[in-house]
Length: 283
Image (cartoon, rainbow, N blue to C red):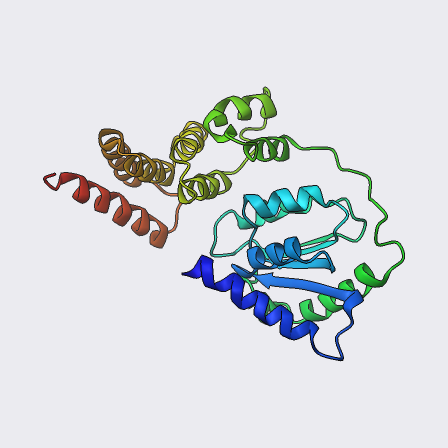
């Protein structure tokens, strides 16, 4: 219901907005926070008169990402906070900012601020910053001036390659090609890989999700969460023995985990134990 009705609500609101006599058709901008990010990007996909996007605390889906890649001159304002309750979203938004070559594209990353519109309370200057940015990005005669493309980092190369059709199933190979013999450790965070694994799982790509989460476990072998997440993917794919093994591994590692805070450890334990309970039920 969410995926079916929300875009219709956004479209209805958009039609109402542009019907108002005080709205200038030449400076239309779409913006959203959290789940509204995806809706804003998809609105721009349908309406080329939208000249810029303001995106807070979330990324868009694969269709939205491919749209942004196909329209690199579209200016983007992206803001996120590192204490976001959605782990990994800050790094993913940084990646999203690389899709635009517009000189006015701006990425703002706060240390604190929470998720979505919570950032307005933590950073009261943010609304005015957005308004000023929109004024420049939409009305400036240099709006189409491309900035020099940045050097592509191993992380960006890897994440871009994952978006290719069917590529996620070869996640380990793609990672090796992007990272090379990196002496500084993994080039992509555990949280980003975990998030992308669940994104593929939600989209029905079980094999791709398993490959991404297996890669995560190989890069972060001491993390209880990577095994709990991998157990979820195996369970969804009907590989119950592997689901059980990974849930048990997560619980074993929790006994020695000093990295995750207590509430996170509890969440991992509850998730792993729930899988084991489910798998112990007679079929």
